Length: 372
Image (cartoon, rainbow, N blue to C red; front, top):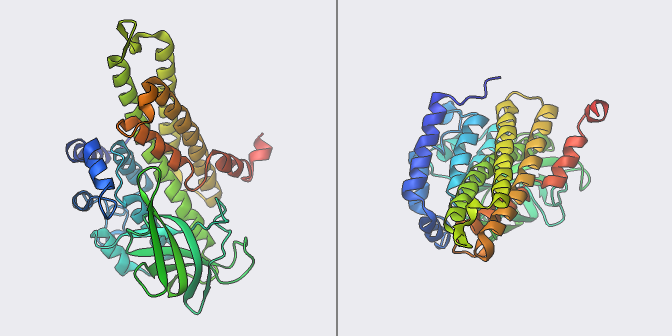
């Protein structure tokens, strides 16, 4: 398998990196995240102009049919800027619509940047068990509550998992629906998360909804969409790890103790080498998961995704803690980019499954016990 990026992918990465360096510095990010809508309208327009909203959309709907590796490239570069715009939520929602089928008109609007999406899969009791669904759907009407819907209030439409039959934890009987956030019977409570993004708790009371795919058979699409989101989160984390390592090294070169920069201390050099190794291992396993994602069987996809999510989660915690230690007390203040990076890495680890969850999932896949 060829793990080298194509010329087009390298050009895309360069274009996004130029946007981040020129128009999305740390101060611009703070301004965007403190705005009334929780993101920058100009920044969103720039992402649309770069073709990023069209990238994952099929060509038939005005997109570019981008692969998981293409999206990995995008997310790595957006991660370097800690972008707060609802891009990830939108493309993950678009993936659900692609897999379910039948929403070509909405995908066209997504490609043009006219519609933002979000996925409402989590509930208060579910934690990482996406099959643990209490929200119900009868006669095309939803009832119940979804929690921590990332960029739920910023989205125009939500992809919602609901139970149409079966028990609370059954995979069979789960259906997916498309709901307008401003529609009747939908109440959205917006709030800022610790990583300075936005999330929402969404309550449905006889809310009209459009069925996606076949009723009661939404689990496969839901799981595949969550795995897609996990790969993109890992990709974003790799970009953040690179930037956090570079930021920490620059700080160590300027901060002095005993009349010399602390970067000269051998003990800290060893720790920064370990941070670099964590980032490189995360990059490798994420590239493997992205490269195999589109062609792997469901069993293989679960193994690759869980291996990547677990390794990246371990790296995020280790690199984040070391960066804070090397920065000293300044490392946890909002004035320092390192603190924002560590917060985002921590949130990424707990989104769509943390280290323990994915280690358990990896070990539960067929063939693991025999190989061990």
